[in-house]
Image (cartoon, rainbow, N blue to C red; front, side, top):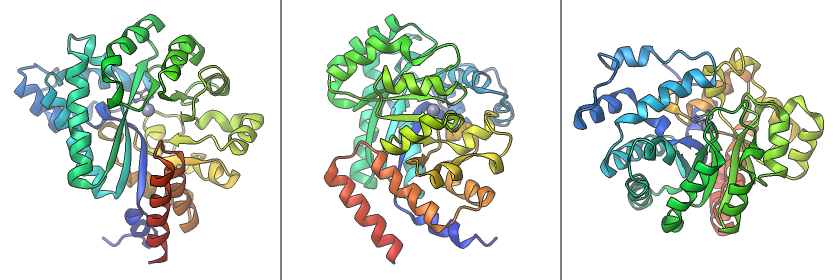
Length: 338
Ligand code: ADE
Ligand code: ZN
């Protein structure tokens, strides 16, 4: 099968991935392998029947199965293996910088130690740098369906590990759990020098994006696809160059848009929003990084400039240092000139 020339171009683009939940990279095969290794009985007889259950109607219908899948993760080696499998996929897609979300509460609630989780992930990040040339960082997310008090407990558990992650995020069930619920814990994290992001405007209204910006003081918005309903918000995102980490395949699988042809990614780029594309939970949504370039490219008729802009935006939106960003930009220009 021949590929479209722009897909070859997008494939080779150096790029950053900024919105990947590492627990969402657990492929059914690895869930079964880890289940066997840890003698955990799964409610599905085989890989095919688990994969067949991945038919979602909204965010919550996905989260129920996503949290169940994570129950096979027990040892530090399990967390390492999960992240390493992701890095190999990312390398194949020419991802050169990755910022990985992890959900400690999904594991500590089951009696797994915080240090087990973060040490396994940190080791995989180090190996990704050394063996794959991918600069990898961790961002710790609080589950917004839990209380702010529980988020504070998690931040306390994280304090001995402050050098191992660069920031905090906010994920899980959005509607009914607005950003301001976590105002105090985000303020404390900022005082610790952590970078701050939050999911907002995935299913929730533009007001949640405003409060993520004004109350939590986040530096970028995860998803943010509902922002185009609010002209004033769009003006602010453009003027302040507040990035959105958009996840096109996720939005289709969770029925945020009926199909990719109706996704607003192209509009965002044409409006001058610093939009990036990312895979969110690639094992569940049918594609890693490059599929999130190729499928919108075809459905929305994105051109070469759009694709290059997405790669450039990914570096601008990243938490890399200014020197790293300059080096990434040089690599991008060299690739596009070549
Ligand atoms: N956790 C994992 N994926 C998520 C998503 N798309 N939205 C909110 N929480 C998540
Ligand atoms: Zn997400």
